[in-house]
Length: 473
Image 1 (tube, helix red, strand yellow):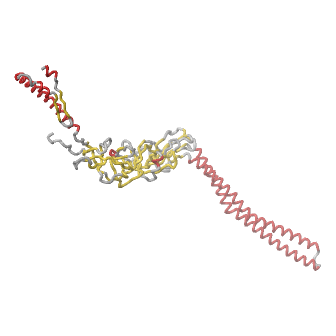
Image 2 (tube, one colour):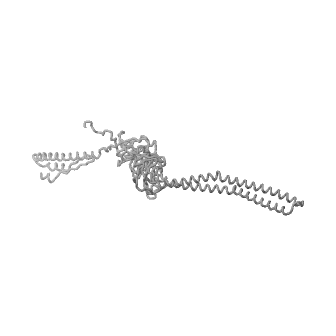
Image 3 (spheres, helix red, strand yellow):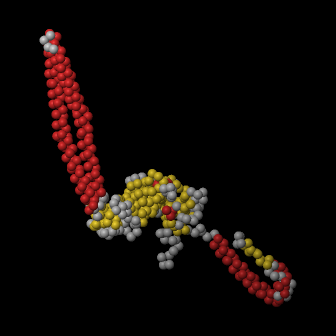
């Protein structure tokens, strides 16, 4: 035993070659050759037991090492993923924004005069039509003033009719007769003067009578000229001025009457539009102040959603584009269309105001409600699309997808691997993305589980039955 203790066994083995070697065994055998046979047999028995124990330990180590080596050389794991095909579908680029509803038309009825409210003919919530009388203010003094001015207008109108129809023609006729009479008188005096001048030249008439005939001729000529000038004045100036004076009096009276009638009409409040009464702050008998709204009427047969969006998004929109109003509490969106894209930016928010108009037949959409608008800027009817989850960021900052293909290092033809491929994307429509370049219809890609998946990874469809599983298990 002491010898065995001094000459301890040393063992060595090579893992890669699966070979083992023991040293010291030969030395032990040579040392025991000179012993007695009995001692030799006892030592040999003990040596055999010891060698068997050592071999047992070495065999255990060898099995463990072979098992570890087998684990490191185990086949690459297969990752279950969801695989889909690239499909053609219609995609729409939508621009969404928060908006506030406004009526299609609204009118705040403001009285032009200050007077107590005599009576209201409608209440809040009443439906009215354009031109309908809604309220009356105290107007007895205005009615009297209008009546007075109406009488003055009627009188001026009668005077104008008389002047243009009777007085002026009569005056013209009188002047014409006077001019004719003066002309005849002039002609008669001219004949008398010519006759007496002839007699005077013959010596049959004294000088005095000839001179008298000359004086009468001069007077007749002057009268004829005066009558003719009067007639010409009436025709040229008098007639025009007389008509102008009569017309001026008529227009003045008419203006006063219309002004009084307007003041009277201001006491009657009428609706300028069809709609519903939404505000009525006063009660009958209270004072209505000029410039303060007395009633508010809104036309809510249609509503307008006003939203503010960035300039880059507004550049994609135009009047007539389809849109939807998404209202809280309503299952279906309300269809509408873009009715206005503001040509100028809001200086405070540097955004563009966009209006979306929608019908409101049941009156369920209330002005002032906050809604969300979804406007369709572009539409592609036959685009290549993939699920949004299939898109992964590439190392160079671009977008890529994991395309399903064969495994180049695998000896099994049925094995599938995911290969990263860069793509160029376009419109995003909810959970679908348009692919412009990099894929074609029918290509199979990894839809779910693509993020973080290494390139050339071995994959299997998540719906497929895992390999090596028994139905009993």
